[in-house]
Length: 275
Image (cartoon, rainbow, N blue to C red):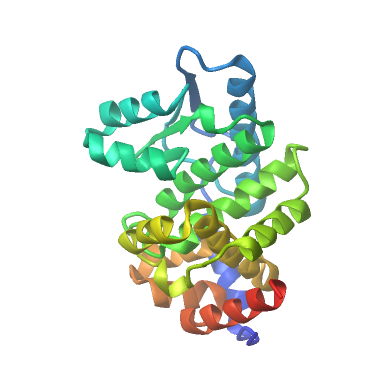
């Protein structure tokens, strides 16, 4: 691993200031709406996840959401597809693809979650926090696209989701990390970070390597970034992306290492873990 330049610390301070919003504590509400047949305990778990995530972003990044967000909880795969079609006017084919590879989806200011795929409190805390993290990424990076570096956007959401599982008392962060390592060790194939940069390449990897493996690979990369450089770069990237719109300069500015060098370092790190 290459050491970060001395200027990185100053940049991270500037990023923290850039993320500050006025009226901390006066957050625009996140409304959780449960459709019929969604169990009350599931609705309560998702609401708890929202509260934990809002608190985490205030404490860690001094950041509040500035838009009204809806979280729509649906009972099964058919409802998941139907509500996505209704809300976002997507095709049945696209809805079916999302049903096969995801349990939650974020577009605009709406999050839709298939509750049938989250049968435990741990899974509910994780998924709701993951999707709500995307709302912060969208807000910080605008007008740039939050998914400009796909693996990082999804990986960061997974890391923060794992943190909320820990905070919510549903599973220690260390246990989640080990679960991810075990899943990658068992996987017959794994993607490379260079292969999951864009949306088409990400979804191609979901098909080739499997959804779980691809998400775990991205999550471990974001976790490695947090372990070696702290949590500021996880969201600092999106502030830098807002300023210059290009993934490689934004990553280097936030993390103090080139995207190419980080990719090489992460691969070597993961290879050691999986031995």
